[in-house]
Length: 206
Image 1: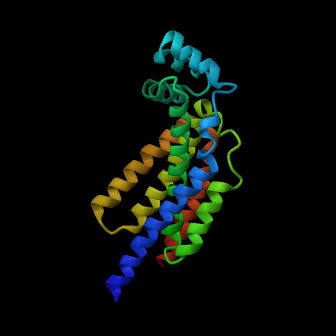
Image 2 (image 1 turned 135 degrees about the vertical axis):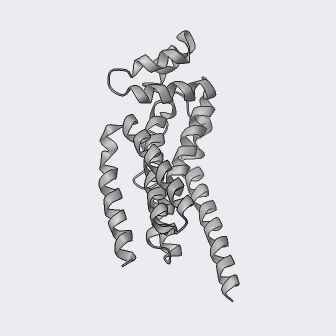
Image 3 (image 1 turned 180 degrees about the vertical axis):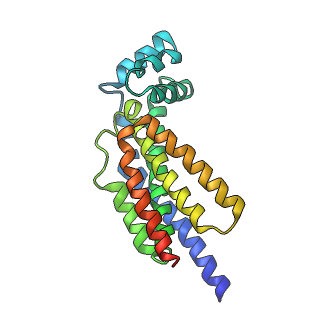
């Protein structure tokens, strides 16, 4: 009976992940074939095409230099192909959704259906109106996704009893924290959220 219940929850988690993926694709992916480049996309694309990927780094040197480094390396992989950038943005939208789902399951492990519903709502509402600016705004989705992943890994490290896994989760969480803060300093508000969630996990263990 216990094994059957465990298998159900494992299958339920997989189904929930598929639902999250489906919601992400329907909300943001269906329109991709109709989308192109817009607004600030163009000056970065021009710089990469005319002067090479390395030239993207100085474009952000005055305010967010690390973002320019990340942008430059991503450009080397994706190039100027429109669909590549839109799929990349969609991927980070999905990763952010999974990270949010992971956080919810860590703090409310018994609320299987409610946490899935919350994640679906998180993906759909309030939405991200700049999603069509996939070349420029992928930085926001990348920073947002890594911020949520850093919190999820930190909470996972707190909940595991295995020393190796705890160390691994904590170290990767710290790396991702530095990553997203170097990209967008105003996302530091996530650290307040992290402290609240860590306090809640400690409270649960009392």
